[in-house]
Image (tube, rainbow, N blue to C red; front, side, top):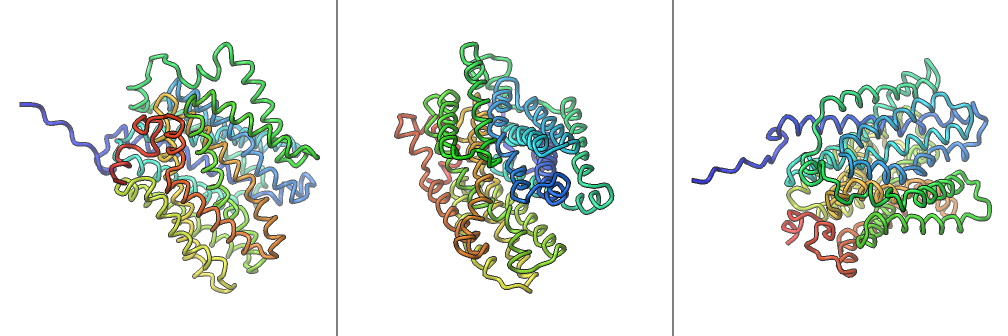
Length: 482
């Protein structure tokens, strides 16, 4: 009689101890990532005062981390594809920790800009490596939950950062907030000793040295040209987002787009049109979510007149909604499928956008409830992005494919505050500007994902829909959608 196959885990309790440990480690890493990334937004006024910066120039320090994210996603993703997800995740944690510590020692605007760029490299690598690490350690039937639960760590990290700000900065000044960045390094040392490698990567790549993204990008014939291209793109992005491009802004933007396409062609081969489509999808996703994340405090202070404590409480509930929504989205998507759940969540979120920005001052409890619901459905649903993107790439290139395409698209997060401010000047109302961006771009992203645009582009360019990299969803997603 044939042996009965082992039961496939369907809940967190049924996961093995190594699988639970893998998730907890990646979750903690991503929480600390969110903590370090958001610190700059909390102390912009203190930094502007010390370095004698205008608030507009100080705000470009937020964009500095976005400038370098694409490079972190590309390089650390390639390392993850070649040498393992665990090693890449550890390097990413060390990178954003070192960058955060260095921010505490910054002596000028440009030194702080450079150190924030190091944080961005680490954050990008952490997103791609931790997401692939957890998903490839968990059963396929639970991978939406793996992605959703993992991304719930980021908003919790931002909440902890806000609490740390209230305790540390009044007592020790803004620099001590960045010195706390040494804590994740201790986590990295622990992970290096105690974690196993991701099971799927170990089985499909492991010690074999097949062609991976690392050998494609950094082989003998391409190492120098790609290094030069990376330096040129980095310099162009610094000039663009530090607002020092002069009259050459549009020329530099065209150069950056061409450079990203060149990397995509090398990285993804025949899949490069699919990768570009994913970048556009993520760019639009950041344009609907980041104007609210970056400008909501300003809206609450200026147009509704709330004080600092009320704003802090509102942001707390928004962050909790984000975390809760990520977890719920993962559970639902493992039943309904990634794309279907994503689209439903986006359209449901539209029911809360209008009330949030139509609510008059004085209704603070109603604001908490609406922000919680809006962020749970709009931002929380983005917890499915790692699974959605990762389904388009085979294991041998998944970390770099996910890391690069997501973090190039994340440049929308640098554009978003500028777009929101520009529209607000035209409309005369920041609330109306945020509503317009959120609604229009939410619909765009829902249509792209709902109509399976990246996979359709793949099929149009000759990639089989049954190819693991040509599918816009895993096999269980296609079954759920049937």
